[in-house]
Length: 262
Ligand SMILES: [Zn+2]
Image (cartoon, rainbow, N blue to C red; front, side, top):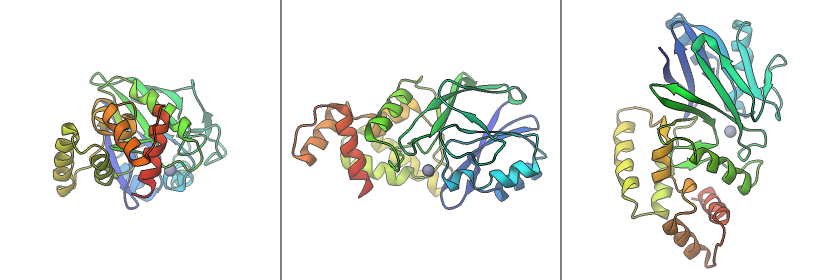
């Protein structure tokens, strides 16, 4: 049976570990050591590595892990420098089949945070819940900074995520949730779902429990970056801008700019 757990890395990164029997896959191993430790402790065989984008905190462990596990396939974005020469370049529309774990991912191009950023979507997932490994595109309560792409690109990527089934589990790669929710609250202080979720996350974090994965349904209810078309969000941003924002992408761009300095 598929099991998914978080391996903590750096200050606030999560390396997602997927296991089925003794077979394992890791997503965005920025460090090798914490992954090696878990694989050894649990007597797991590394079958594959999935990479969402080229940033070092997502790829730094690939060389070491690939050297230790030469059979493991490494999948990485086709439009970015590959983390190792033998990596398999994938992009929009490609599939990543991992029969060892009974998983079959669809690759989505999600430019914005970086230009070649990709996400891995498994529509059948587990227990009827689809899985989305979205790197630094979507966080709980937030989205990635626009280091390389445009607001329109990120808005389009998030709009596609927003249309996935509500019970899709969302595996972002950073524990940024509490800071993100403080920003959402500044935009939408009357959002009751947001208020309840803030209390829930505060409890989890006090107990050292990751706030991820989230779900598409939850993010649509609380994450202002998926709510640029909601009248309250639009009104708040027009107030702040002192100007009319006609398109939802303009609301989104204003949110992203504000969050950059929040
Ligand atoms: Zn990044």
